Image 1 (tube, rainbow, N blue to C red):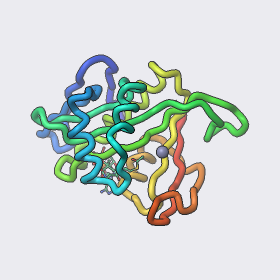
Image 2 (image 1 turned 135 degrees about the horizontal axis):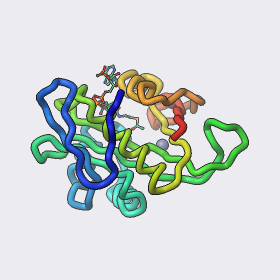
Image 3 (image 1 turned 90 degrees about the vertical axis):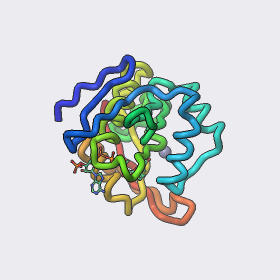
Image 4 (image 1 turned 180 degrees about the vertical axis):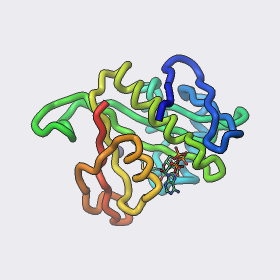
Length: 176
Ligand SMILES: CC(=O)SCCNC(=O)CCNC(=O)[C@H](O)C(C)(C)COP(=O)(O)OP(=O)(O)OC[C@H]1O[C@@H](n2cnc3c(N)ncnc32)[C@H](O)[C@@H]1OP(=O)(O)O
Ligand SMILES: [Zn+2]
């Protein structure tokens, strides 16, 4: 795929249906209500408002939203940590962490999550010095797992009972 992601300002892209245009850009505090609403609608993992605020304040370049006709339809929230590499055993690195990503059902399969992931990953590398990125995903979440695999992520571990309902998580990682 040859999607050239820019890191400054909003970027307008064409959806995979060939007719729905969308914009990806950095989130602002004005977007937080929409982001929180989308998170509650599409995922069982919800967080208090301060958690979103803190990520936006600390890693604004890697907190991305997508809009269609000026309406926020998706978000990705990330952070960068220092710790053991998930790819090169025994090496300590700065690693990006995709904390949460979601797209409203009516805006799916257009390439929006792909575009937001690519922008967040590039921002984590360029602005925050991350050399790899990781995330956790429910072992049953086939759509998300395929999305991550398409972007180059590999399953590097499995965390038993990671979710509050007891489901396991795959730990997935990708070099940047
Ligand atoms: C770290 C975490 O947050 S894990 C939790 C991830 N979030 C969720 O599960 C929330 C609910 N789901 C969603 O919000 C969306 O379905 C997402 C975020 C997983 C995907 O968003 P979309 O914008 O639809 O993804 P996008 O259009 O970029 O799809 C890229 C590829 O992912 C895969 N994919 C996406 N959805 C599906 C699906 N329903 N079934 C199978 N593969 C899928 C496909 O390979 C797709 O490429 P294709 O459409 O050319 O076949
Ligand atoms: Zn996580």
